[in-house]
Every structure is written in C-alpha cells, then in structure tokens.
Length: 139
Image 1 (cartoon, rainbow, N blue to C red):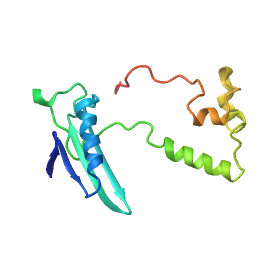
Image 2 (image 1 turned 45 degrees about the vertical axis):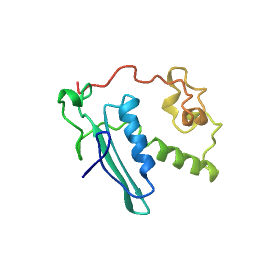
Image 3 (image 1 turned 30 degrees about the vertical axis):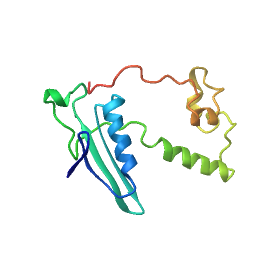
Image 4 (image 1 turned 90 degrees about the horizontal axis):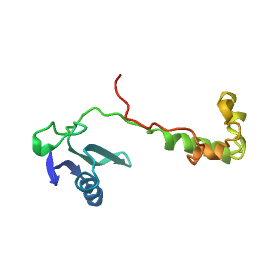
C-alpha cells in the first residue's frame, strides 16, 4: 500500500485525487483522529484510504496505534440516508403523508407530548427528540 499523502495510506484511482486530499485535510486540519473510507463506482473500487490513529485520544507522533486496514469502528447513523430514501419513495407513491403526525404510522411515538411531530419533522431532524449528550462507552 502506498503512503499517498500526509500519513494517509491506501490508494485512489485516477480522477479521485480530490477525495484523497479532502481525507488528508480531515485528519490534518479538522481534528479527525483516525478514519477510513472506501468508495466503489460502477462496481470498481476507486478509493481505499485510511490514516491517523485508532486510539480515541491518540497521537501518532507519540507512538499510539495507527489506523490499519480492518480497524474496527463504531458507525452511527449509517442507515439514515437509505431510510430517508425509502420513506420519500413511499411518499412519491402516495403511501406516506409527510404532513401527517408521525403517530399516525407509529402510535407509540405520541407518548410524552410528541403527538404534534410530523413525519417531515423527523426526516429533517426537527422533531425535538433529545440527542446523545455524552460519549457512549462499552458499559
């Protein structure tokens, strides 16, 4: 594997150099500790990059464990885009009303004052449902 830029390892196909540059900037300038990305286009792998450290508070200069191919990671919200596309397809087919209360489709959601939340509010992250306010731990 090639050290392609600033500690980022892996490869990119011709025409995808901008992805490599953005990935390297994410690690160098935007505080990302470690990450990996793989992109397939028309069934062909065109981007396969990784870099940084796999330790949450790690520092490669201090000798912490580098990100490797196959490093396990927690993925959050990975299915939101697919779920939203499915719901919008149902709306397009006339099977889902974006202006209906979410409780029309999910009666249990109405509990604790949420009966006014519309389907469109949930799709736009405007449902006023609390988010995680602290890191998750294995415990």
